[in-house]
Image (cartoon, rainbow, N blue to C red; front, side, top):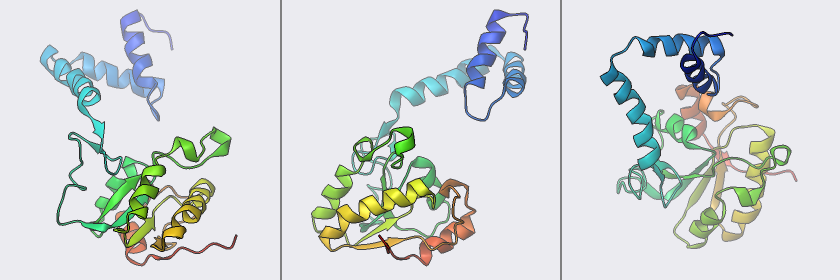
Length: 203
């Protein structure tokens, strides 16, 4: 795509660097922004700068938050004895959207994937083990996507956490195998969470 302005081309390249955004879509978005007022552009760019500057990870669960502790972990009405283990923030949003879960979360920050060079030490696992060992946790729910990487991570976590005698459950298979959790519809995800069952391994 040959553009007549290096500034326009740079803006298009920056937007096209986002996942799922091709050059044509990026150009359409940039041209839309070009027609906006200077005040609107300032507000638009400032929102991203402020997000990068102020967002942090919750010290308890790893969720994204404005404060030291996220609103879920600091909510006294949530059941602090049940932990739902998820891959990332998108899964927290998906599960919260069902309105069925009242416990807390633990965000791993990914799944074990040797092909991508991601091992257990690259994930937020040690703090989960620490939480489990304190004797105040009654149940841990594995809510990772039903993919090969998700199943591998579940099994690794099970071997580490089963030592503490905590009930370990997993989502029912209402979520299709190979489907990322964040893309499951709320009704299916809610039922999979509601009808969770004890984690089992054949290995």
